Length: 95
Image 1: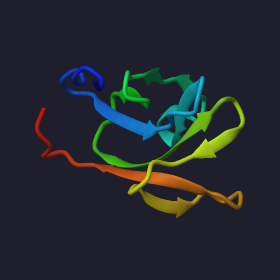
Image 2: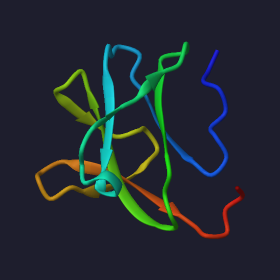
Image 3: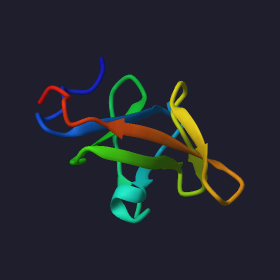
Image 4: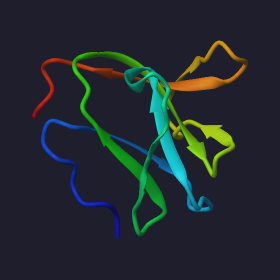
């Protein structure tokens, strides 16, 4: 079983981290201040965030140490030798 549907108007960011005991989300939309993600029964961790249209970089911190990006996410250099995921939020998306 997965997570409940995201609240209308929020963008869900998620990562498969079945091995994790704690996952946090950080990105340029929150000045890279990690916020807790929620674990669904199927091992996927998610966070719903309010994002205005634009382009954002983000990553998940797993168990307080490893930074990961979701599989199949567009990856960009983070400027520190690693990768960040990239999401583009369009103004014409369904709400």
